[in-house]
Image 1 (tube, helix red, strand yellow):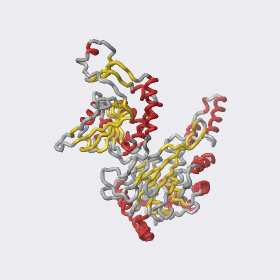
Image 2 (tube, rainbow, N blue to C red):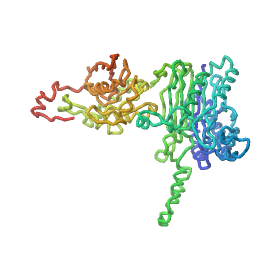
Image 3 (spheres, rainbow, N blue to C red):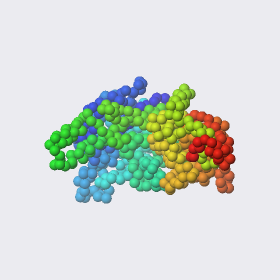
Image 4 (cartoon, helix red, strand yellow):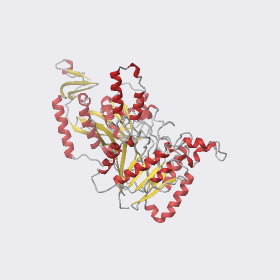
Length: 594
């Protein structure tokens, strides 16, 4: 396989007559944004991962969407398209009308293809192939190397909604037919599946932590678990390497599959909604306001506001994942993905890049090794020049803000003669942003392979909070300093045990005692012969070497602590503790108790 391809990745139009997709300004700006890519590689295929219309839509609604998609394909010069139905493309009114038919099983209304009555109108899209009688409803070969298969994941969705489900028996027969059709060439094709439902759990990290990391049935984007296990095995059997979905209205990347030893790895990606916007909902709320209590002047201003609010010039997206699209580039070595969002900035609406996972390498024919991240991530490196710029800037800030303090600083059993006021540094959003960006760049490889990221103490938690948006699939938690109380919510992140890759974030490492105490207190939860990576802003003892910590139990395994700093700033030790330091004992100078 030698050619690369580029995918325009869309989902969840939720088209209605009042939808943002009816706004000419929005569509034109979207097409312009896609066309502004600064290279000669165009869009090879348009992928639409379900929920094209809202609540089953109407005949006219799907015809309008078909015209809209044709317009987009013409403006961006796209020849091929894959479109699959979502749960909102099931028309429940049509199914309700079938009740009472003696030939219909009312307990299995979901099985009748009539539920896609109006979705069929998407056949008017140029070059589209849709067969709703099949499990693979749409199929396209792109650049002779990439086989796209659109799969219906709404098998069990009928009059009532439900979770994702695929007819695996029908699908296996269709996979076998494709394999037979392409013969020996089949194994050389990159197999890419498009379906609506995201098969992995999509919950906030806070929700997972609060539930002791146990996943519940109410998770968004959930899939029938038994059915997913069967489907995953089928994907592995027939060489599926990439799965693109919608449904969750969120940008979600799972760089590794939940494959077992010997299975192949799969790249999963979900995109946010292109069409959902809240203008109409907010307008409806505003219209419910009782005008009887308003003066005539207030009423006039109120109606002027409503008129303005509903105009094409106003775009308001409340959800972070609404009004988004993605572009995915794939070749034989890597997959790159970039998501864009439509925002209004000081009255000027524009598409901005807002979600970009690291490049994923070796996505083809890679065998899974249980417990290991199979992708080589972290392609973003900080050049020495960039690091020099950061160090110059931070030194200027320390100098200007007088953050390097002299005196005697005493805490626990340690005394130092100077210190860095990191609190003042971290509460400034501009400074914090600069620090977090440098951490994410300089230590991307370390962060990418982490299973769990711990903010140690309040300052570590601040740093953790500033970077977690970049890593939506990782577990994050706060861990208080040794002498502080913490609750079950904060502890539960480490209760799983045997984690290989733990990252600890903190502001300053001096003696390493706090970090070592953390490892000692949690050594039962940390896998033996592993490394705890510490990322800190400042390392104040240039000669510091934290010895390995022996894991308790019969195995006596070793846990290595490795410190990674943004910069080194020496802080001089007193050399004595509080009991024999004359400055402290005799009160010869200011002593800062910490």
